[in-house]
Image (cartoon, rainbow, N blue to C red; front, side, top):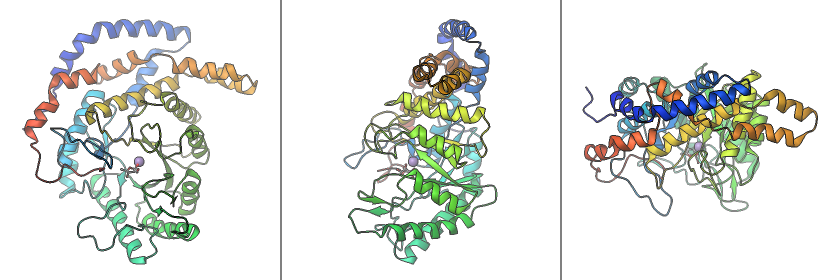
Length: 433
Ligand code: LRH
Ligand code: MN
């Protein structure tokens, strides 16, 4: 019996009782509204209930910037406590049964034990993430000047070995994918030979690719800058796509929303990667300027909707090789990470359900008849439909919380964790910053 505090089903049901009446009223009203559009609201509840997104293990600890990190009482100190918090998020919002781990931050002493701990809480493991953007204590070769593209073969070999170790750990945990993001690049013109660096990347990735089990996928994550501030080896979707093509059928391109210059049309990149059969999936977050890792849908909710509009269109058309992995990748510097991850999980389901509401025939007619305003109006009708009652009913039917944030706060979970998790000397559970 787990001695640690957990929010129990009875408490959630009790909290839901308070909201049940108005949710039902709003739900019935929305049902009538959608009926006029020949949409059965129950189909949308089914879609909402089936939506799944993975939580990043590094997202349940407090994030920070190079200027400061303001740790919160009761934050997780190791991978087991991170999983406790992931389980709490899953219990309340019901759409996040998978956790994406980062190695070595989450390297398990006993993979089997960790897998069982997760299973007992309804969790499983999504894509693994390697880390060759930091030097670990006692590491033989530094990644200061790169990892998979470093001029020195010994450094590249060390980075390749680390990625293969991540795959081995992932196999023991039941994961089926490995994400490779490298910060390799230069801070000065001339620092890197741009073409040679990319050649070395491919040479290294071929060794990592060869270590993939048959039923695994490798996700290449591009990013236009940071930590390198002049040139980045895997800087955009085009370079990522070229490499995925070069590597083979198990290689795909992962889109982290924050890894694009401001105003880049990300939904078009998504449509391209779908059309080319190379969309790996997403690291969802939001941003105003750089890779801000803000909460999904908190700054550009219409962009998030337009991305899901492309995804739902592909889903309906059964595009070949269309099996995107949905993951959150955020840094929670000023909010409770659990609250932010729950809110973000809900924002993704909202965008997905709204995209289901797009009248595809009307949109296609407007496109083919060159009627831009009709096309935009068709999208806006879906985007401006308040689907909150559908999301709340889907959560309640799955035993989750109608109002996850209030239920979490009422539960006193964070205060209980502050008692259970006195700060350990030295490090909070390792993560970003
Ligand atoms: C790089 C990144 C990558 C992770 C890291 C934590 O910016 O998005 O996905 O490895 O954040
Ligand atoms: Mn990312």
